[in-house]
Length: 75
Image (tube, rainbow, N blue to C red; front, side, top):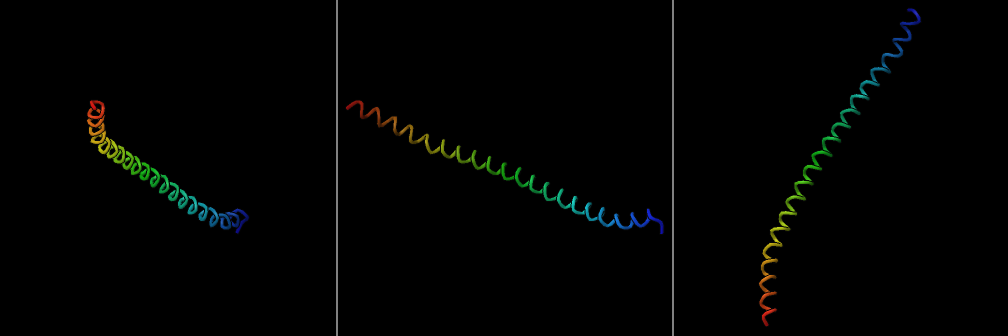
């Protein structure tokens, strides 16, 4: 065995472990990014739904309050 063969034999396992580590970390980071995007989408939908419910709940109150103001000003 020459010196280069010994170096390659000793480095190849480290390179293999490094590549496996890189692949796993890349998968973790991509999964985290997808999860954050999905949570942002869900939060935006929840916010839109809450705003719509607030507008729907406020509309009847506004019309009821306007009617009350007219009747109290007439007195």
